[in-house]
Image 1 (spheres, one colour):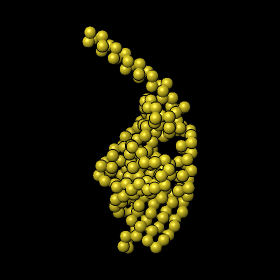
Image 2 (tube, one colour):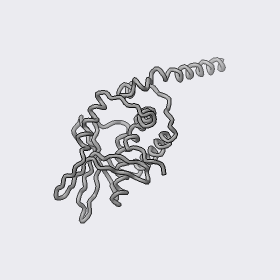
Image 3 (cartoon, helix red, strand yellow):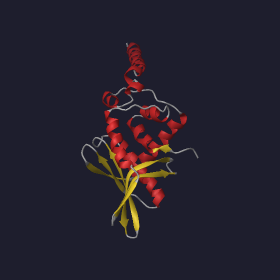
Image 4 (cartoon, helix red, strand yellow):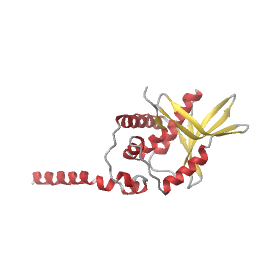
Length: 210
């Protein structure tokens, strides 16, 4: 069986497949203010430790893995909640900013839940995303739709990484401007050949229709 891919690669892939490849295939990295804020937030949450309370045990920086998904990584926080004689895992992922329109954060959290289900031999129906800007938790239910999306993203991410293929850039102003790898990626410059090709195709089509 091939080596597991990092849990973080799933979030990177859904945000931008090219970003994911630059990080996990080409091993490139650059930091900006946004990634620095996120790193500091994760470092605070990922310090290995366990806090015991009567009804909840809180584990920070827990190593987790799933053979079914072929992923491995570190869970920011796993709350182990007492359920009779057993403990129910409840993953909590820390993110900077606020809830997003896309589902990248949810997929990463769902993958953590599937890891915990294999490790604890129990179901994990929900978890939470804690956003640094809002200072609130967003509850995430791990329904069939999200689980299916998570498995699909795992397969696509693994295929891209194992193929060692870096997708061509696609310039999207808002997304690209927020990416710390923009200078390494150069999406605006490298996306131009595709734009020229599309323009030429439109011109040829217009001439054929005359």
